[in-house]
Image (cartoon, each protein chain N blue to C red):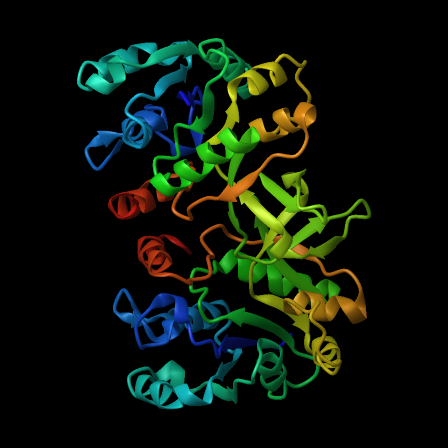
Length: 224
Length: 224
């Protein structure tokens, strides 16, 4: 089946400090977002690439695209006021009948195996959401100002790409925004019921702070 | 009030590969466990230090102690078959009326502020447990083989040291082991009710894999 990915790169990345949005920061001599895009074209060279950009970053994108042929083949969409609006804008560039991932630009360490598992689950069952184990003990705050210990073997950390059949995820994004929609899986689930979880890869961190950027530079060459 | 810490260093550290248990691996030219001990004596030079060791590692400890005076002033306790047994052995070396932290040897990046908050809460309220925010979306597996999205603003990742009034934590560890005891806070809580949560520090990771070791070497000098 045909595949696509919507790379959400509309955030300002304010926690990195500095002027340049994090997706344009260099990681081993190449903008972070180019690493991310390359993971997807390596998985499927025919994959349609949609990048959702903040309008204010369009100049930055064009400068970068001057140096990277892959960037020139990308379909651009406008970022909205919220992540929900941004994804919705991205989905207008996706036809029905396509398996579509929605991925954070700031996750360049996605492995080929994780991509394979996520897209395959979406073909088979409508959705594929990569998750990993929780390493630490977890507590949940309760209404009384206290907290209760949680069974961490039942808790999973959710990564991206969250992958869906395009007809379904486009339909799900026709709903009015609800604060319970904290990721694409929760939007899908509100219409189509339980999503399918697959194994992610531990290195697939979301780069948020300068420390994450250092960690990513240590890891980037070791992730297949 | 008098303070103590029990450093639990009885694990085999099998995920690091290699022969040497991780607590003896060098981080910036010094064994990991020495960094951890130094954080506590810097916080309070009078603090009593108890280290719980696997009996098989005693030789390693003695070799190391030849080079580090601080290690020679430590009280050693024998590791047990489980973490629960190890902590219980460590507690036999702690008198009543002392504020006692229980800390993973593999967390050398604990900040002075986190120590201060954790010990102060235990003086004031009986327990002080450092926690940090959750960065990622979380799902909880349910009985039906599906999963539900969790409100991550209510979930906290638990760090160490978990700090307690010694009379209480010694008493709590008189119970028979229960599989629900996944950390010291849960042992305490089963007798004395809700623990007090304080803010931890994000760098305070538990070193488990070679990647964590690299990350720790990047961070060690920046944590006060």
